[in-house]
Image 1 (tube, rainbow, N blue to C red):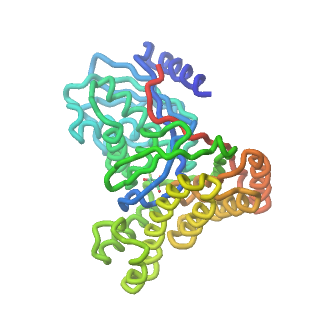
Image 2: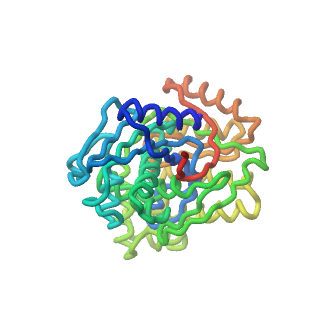
Length: 388
Ligand code: GAF
């Protein structure tokens, strides 16, 4: 599949712009094993890059314009680099163009001096499925522009560029998890990230040696981070931290929860409890993977889902059904992944049970009158890279 997309994106570049690209760069979507809504609270997350990627074919121009085309839209967006501003661009083009703008805003590139570029994007990361198609675009474009504009940036700096594009150009108040996962992904490993220090380390998942797979159940309920629920949850966390007198919920531990319950209203307390217990679950998952291996992390995944369903209230009936059906059909553990309000669940399952689980989920969705979900396994995969 990836080889096809590499060729396809070149062909599409040539058809759209009438020249050949200088190169093709790519970056993966991500699934999050555990650690949800903890990133913007300076907490811990454990995502991994998946084997579905966005490819960017890029060529340098001899003027100062940027053009971006993609297979997700017939439109080619075009703008002079000097005119890049959040007000000047909307729609999907805000993700790639926001990266160019953010490189300037963060002082990495002098946007008055860099050459224009033509970009063509192609992807097999599903959009709206909670698998971070946006971070995949940002990662591929960031790594391409860094090379073509001769910027010497670390992966973490590129992740910050992607987050800035997302926060201030697209207008989605997200944390840094998705960009870090897309840029720092490793084959067969998850990335354990401390979102306060922005330090990351690879954590072996041991899937292959234990004959395990991770099944994604895309509920087909589209989610949106720029809108209501995500923003509200973030605001509740900030209000909770302020009421508890701490800079962020990272500074609250499970032992502090009884005091928090006395000080906070019920809803804010439950939002806080999710974040605090989820941080602990990430740490416990990392420790359990090292000591006992992946077959022992099921209850942590299940508990994470319950916390998102009952305390953080970001699940939807389709996600709950996907998780319950997976659990009832032999999954070691299951939980929704990503920002919530739709998107996907993941199930950790023995390879031999994958088909049974897929059939069971299809059946359960049909029984409940839900649209047919899309299910597929994902393999932890390498982060952003130059392809050719
Ligand atoms: C989305 C956001 F983009 C991430 O930053 C993170 O907050 C996640 O939701 C929830 O864990 O993917």
